[in-house]
Image 1: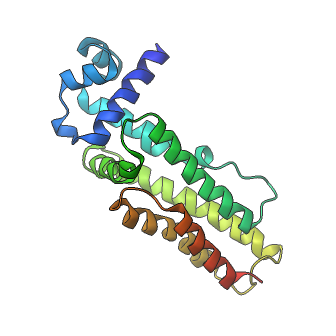
Image 2: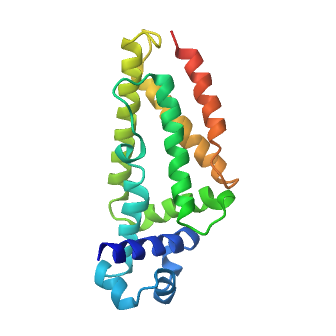
Image 3: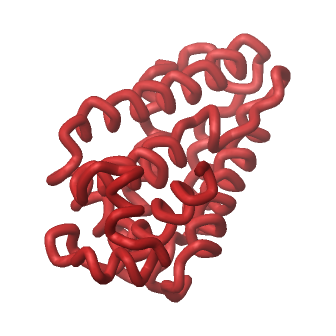
Length: 200
């Protein structure tokens, strides 16, 4: 039962990455999943519920900080920057491994998927806000520890610095999505530049 549901969600995700939600047909879903219409809707109810479940799995669960990053208790800010970028790379590799989209086109397609989610998922804003709050809280926690341990300057506004790290990623990922692939090396350079400015 679980394997069938996973197969349905994975096959549907591939379609929703490539095509607009409203243009994806039930026959296309049957072909992509290898499951009949009756089987698909037995597990999901209808097409909209199917899309919501796909978004929950491949957007909100995938980008939950507890799923995305494994952070040791004693972790410096510099170490966390590497952990954060590795988490981004690992997530991109995972999405690429389950789709048939070229790596150079994946980021663009994924942003398209996110935009569809903002239109058709009834709790999109609530879930997105939760992701943002949790991720900012993690950056804030790491930077606060770095300040307490003397790694960064004592006079820093921790909340403002946490926001800079957070928005750097989303700014770069959005801009590079037009060119097809997320440039994590550029993100690393920007993080190191910011780190040099704030380190003690």
